[in-house]
Image (cartoon, rainbow over all chains, first blue to last red; front, side, top):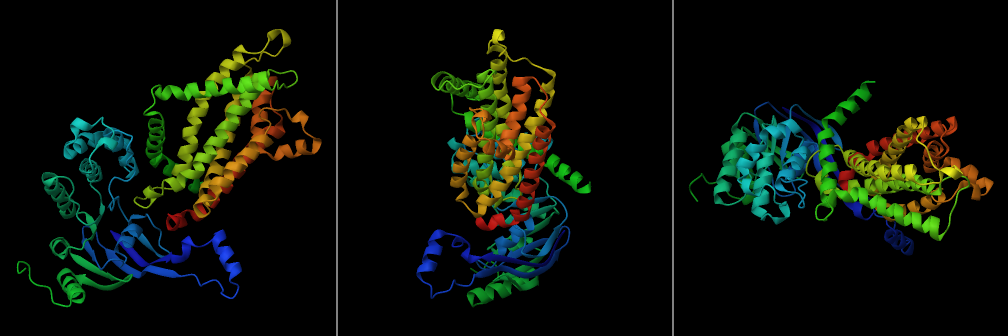
Length: 254
Length: 270
């Protein structure tokens, strides 16, 4: 379960400009102009909701609405400026795959390195090693440095490592389908299986169809606030209507 | 006590990641070289050879009554560890930003892993140092060093130096996130620090005032403690031994507190 209480996330837009001699120089030359007020931007403000065990929650909203920030706050990458997030259970953040891959290392070495970064322990990796290799279809390239891999092969490897866990909380930023046609199908199925497998899921997507298919409830974020929350169909329809100006057509009418 | 237990549990949980990061550093460092891991041994040997020639043959440095080669190498090996470890720990947080924005990893891991990685190289460079201790110097002049019981205190001195370096690494890596100029400034500081530490000269050539101030140089305290044992076969004074502990724990505390207070802000500067 995930408990999000009054979470606010503040970004300082002027952060790049602080503390440089150039700025000091400009400021002394233009004494009339006082330093501009610091500009803040609340990427999230007063977000409160609760996700029960086994629920699949969809997050929708236009670009810059705060969806990814919320995922990062929940996964612990960012600490909220205000409020707090409580999570119980192992979190698998599938936000960006292949974190910490080192191109000089072989696929075998990267499986252990990336696995460790994702928080797996050694015996778990030893045990699941074959499964990862099998799924990635890269057995023949195990001892080849990743720098010689094609981007598709890297993606396949990264996907296989990330999805080998059975997490209690799954955080997904779009369904990933990577690699060639065959692998795309396979990876899609694997993700669907993970989402439907009874874990608690926080799922971000721009595809309303997949949201409707998978989610129990939907949260619509708008400029860092919760605009609407509740029944999947209702929220999706309202969101579509506001974005496109026309009601959402039924599936199959396109 | 509970806090200490938590820290240890956290350490244990992330020890596998720490080992992976260290072994990555090793693999990447030597991956494409012909001699590979052998360089970890060969490099300090060659470096010592060059320094030995420069300082004892060209400049003819000497320290009264002791084996100068051992004197020089003890200081050199220790100072090199300190400068390399603190420098790479400083850059470790910034250079791993891409990781920190993707997955949650406790951030102290990066500077600590760097200090340990350089620490392994330090331990390896003790092998050539031991060879120099055993085989150089003239027994007739009494400049041949002997292994003595006080060697049991060496690990204590080295651990104090490690802890000091980790503390400073945490401090610098944190500061440099907000103030990147630190990368360049610290390079200069290290150079000054190197000359202010009696690595290749003896403190007796300094004026009384500077010699007094030397006591506040942690590196002087660590290196002198080790030299007391290796060169003079005696136990370092209580003042020195307590000084080691004082600097180690003090710096570690400062580094850890500053790092902990600021680590949540790192992500904004990525």
